[in-house]
Length: 146
Image 1 (spheres, rainbow, N blue to C red):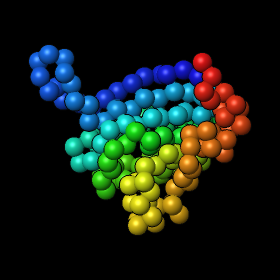
Image 2 (tube, rainbow, N blue to C red):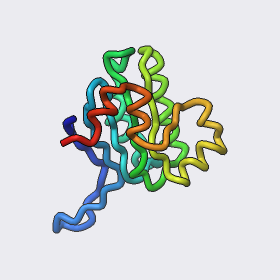
Image 3 (cartoon, rainbow, N blue to C red):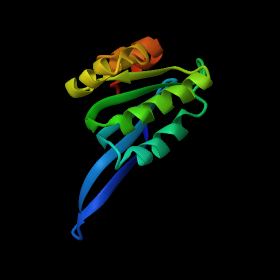
Image 4 (cartoon, one colour):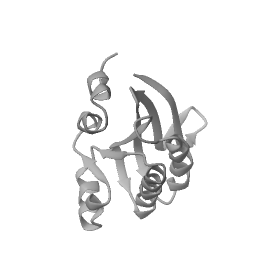
């Protein structure tokens, strides 16, 4: 398991390296699964940035070769613009016969998904480990190891 990269869409709060990070994406490969950890807010301010960071990682997300899991445990807030980014990610994976799982939705996001009936659109699991177990037993076995 290794961290590939980390990106953020932030703005400087002051000239003294005091930065407010609005949204951040970290990616790591675990066996044949790409795990993307999203933190912060995904709203009208950060949705385009999130889309431009997230979607390129999903290229080649096909069959057994590469699967994807998005960890939303660090998302403080998601607007309809953020839901749109998730829909685009799902569509990109489906076009390539790939698999996408969403994990660790906050209670607020769970409520949004329930109201919008997105649980019937996305595969949603309680934990990253549960998602990895569904996508790849090898990835689940490797997850959490140094």
